[in-house]
Length: 381
Image 1 (cartoon, rainbow, N blue to C red):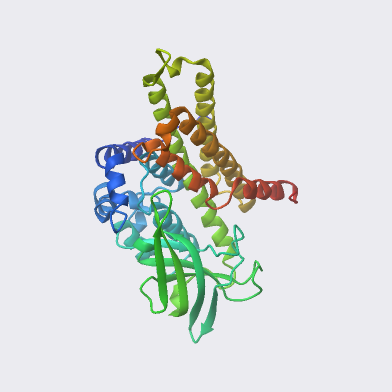
Image 2 (tube, helix red, strand yellow):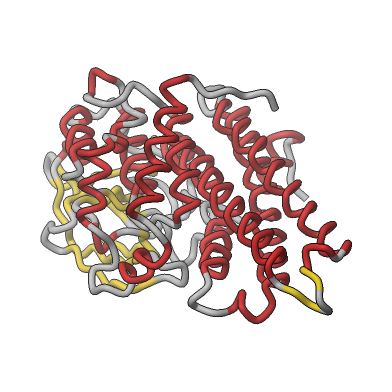
């Protein structure tokens, strides 16, 4: 694919890469994830104030840099290279996406809070029984005067321990799996009736089980149209999927790079293992998987503003490629490193953990293959 960044986009990439190289090395990250909070408020403040990247995808009228999905892609790829744990995806891509696309009356105010680093958002959408069916909701939001009362349980809410607000999907009408009746709410995490059980994830992130017990919210908490929120949810999740593909590309680039470096240094039978033809072939295959993933991610990102069907097809195609590539590149990186690849001290294993999490995020390879087939041919096997 022939794709060139603009001068401003290249500057954004270089700025983020330089900052992370100087202040987000692997050892610093490892120390950070072992702290009680598991993240760095100082880094988040630097993203907001020094770099201004929390405003990358927002218009200048909202106080942003005037970018969009490509800027998110650039930032996420660089974050993938450094295994950044701060919640850019959930706050800027997902939270900002819901606010931008919904026409919410308070969008400008909340986006301003995101850009300043004061508003941090976690996306509470997954439920234990639902898997990748976003409209399969047991969480309910019932009318109460002008507002709503929310009850339910959301599972594995990434970044919730750090969040100030939650974006919550809930059923305001219809049956448990109906496409109609899905609504989206912005809920203060400190609202009465919201409780969390926080825990670390295998890839160094933090997540929560979030419980809502008679949580009262005002009418202004509703994002989008009541009962017709599924289309908005699908759009934002597709944008988040494309952004997570970019993060995976960054992680795979580093796994390939570190594998090459290790193979050139590791000697067996008196010669570097990089000279063994079978390993050369394997590392070339790793490189090809990374480059194919780059092209598919760029294509999906460029198609995010097209029709719902074209957007969804491009995103699913990219996610299938990314999922397969994450497994192939990660497994081969670990195998070529040998026992060293399994140690906690070596970075390559941590990249593989993150890539494995991304592989299942917002839909597995099988899920997206079925979705692509349905969108292309009107049926799924």
